[in-house]
Length: 322
Image 1 (tube, rainbow, N blue to C red):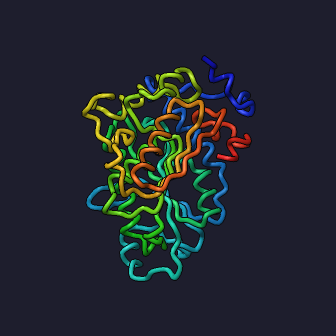
Image 2 (cartoon, rainbow, N blue to C red):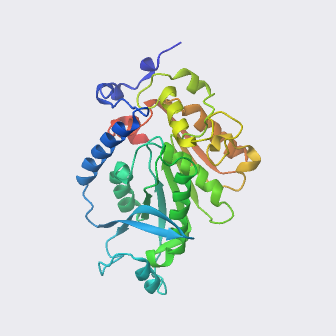
């Protein structure tokens, strides 16, 4: 069988020697190094023209940590958006509301934080003219399913509750997730269906199925960043007392288990997968199931790329297309 190295886009070859070895077994040390590197990169990002605020938010008695990106002038008085301030200002709806993007970072459920995707969220807030809310959800194994998803639900409900004062159009709220964040984004769309009308779900290289039984899962056992072995450990951490691959795992933990009837009525979706990623085929299968359920779907399979290749070499031709 052809090796993944034979299929690798030449633009990505030079990055192989500097990619980190993902270690979710000794996750504490790996997470600490990942967090430190993310914080260093985030500190170098120019946020001119944006208001960026880390805060704790509440809805229905639950709390979550978020980072909010808004265009300057959204809070021209410089006042922090405390609950009291939100209440006082909720009576005056801005003349022109913006779309909002709820972002869920990647990191295999184990690592990752808003710093990890800070540069990209700054870019999206600027270029799209949207309010971005990046969720700092709790991480596994200390906080297994459903805790991370609960945090995402709380953050979304807070966004809806405070849309007027944030200047957000409730009819134009999308969820955006990458890797583990793609899992949570898909699960969030399922969980709030009938309660909150999301207009769009963006799922990039999503981790959707704990059964690890697709052709790409069986084939790619030593690929960069994400391999079958990494996925096995990540799922054990995320599912906690649930056993990966067992019948007890619900679709809100692993959306790839959902049948067509369980996917009806979800918001339009964009799904991106990488050819040399164990997650490739399950992402495409989820796209196909959504389409069969009557959901509008656009799916892309990017050739010659491994998991997170676009982050590793952002100037590559395939990365720019992605």
